[in-house]
Amino acid sequence: MNYSFFGTCYSDHQEFFDCLQTILDQTISPKEIILVNSGEINIEKKILDKIGNKEIKLVYISTKVSRVKALNLAVDKSSSKYSFRFDTRSRFTKDYAENALLALQNKSLDAAVVGGVPKVISSSSEFIPKLCAEIMGRPYLYFFPKHRNINYSGYSASIYLGCFVTSILKNIRFNEKEDILSEDSLIINDFLERGFKAYISSRIKVRYICRSSFFNVLKLFNTYGFCRANTIFVSKKLFISKRHFYVFISLILIVIIFSKFALKGLFFLPVILLIFNLFNEIILSEKVKNLLIPIYGTLCQFSWILGFSWRLLTIFKTSISKSNFIS
Image 1: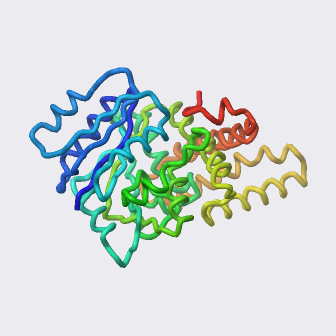
Image 2: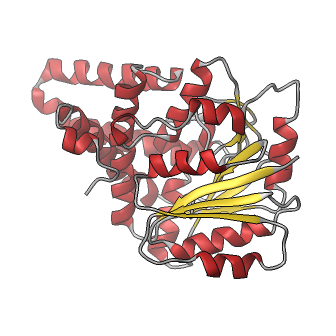
Image 3: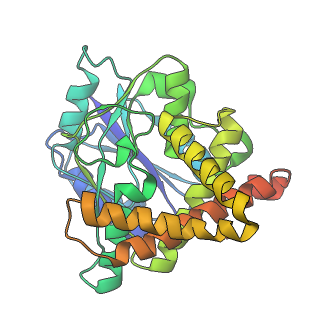
């Protein structure tokens, strides 16, 4: 049951080392850890010191490439049967790898990639970081996708990070077309298009350390919108899942209804989103009610719309499509 952890980092070295500790604490240790570091500081020796006497091989690559190319470079170096992706903000429970391996080897599931729904946690106990974490952890702000339901187990069109069968991942690879930003769902879509299955298990537990600044969360939602448009361009699919179709139809109907009265009616869209968010926070949310979340969440949703729209407007600008970040 050999497996590797692979991932990338840039300047977020402290976040990486916090993630690394949870990798080293696994009940089943990885055969190797593969890191592509695009930052300026060499951290290889510090990583080796952390690994210590554990029988874990370190594959350390220092090169300045885009994140997608870095991921493929790491995958190419994997010598294990299974390859588990990590992110510097991810924190794995001790049985993460054990449960992922069980799912991958479950013949009845027949899955080529598995994963878990991340539990979003705050980087500190201060008000704004906690608010940011609660925003990121509210599924209704994303219109209830399966891969954001912490209790969900089943097949999915998107998986956070992913635990892959290495041979299949090496064949499919992360999409490097134009080096554009894209969603995690793009690699899963490529798996599904080849006839493979992607499965989420509620037993595969992982945490995600949320950004501590609301402005950074706004930028993240903007990036999500930008990535959604990029995924459409790359996959040539307007809707990767039924949820995308239903949300799209709902928004179109709202626009048509309000545009009949007056163009000014379109400005009621944020009010409708706010009402939707308030309803879900008050009635459907199982967490402690916080009426600030629907308000801040509506701002995040509009940041998403702006990111999506910006990508559509810049479709022919290759200098933007080749970027690895949104400035």
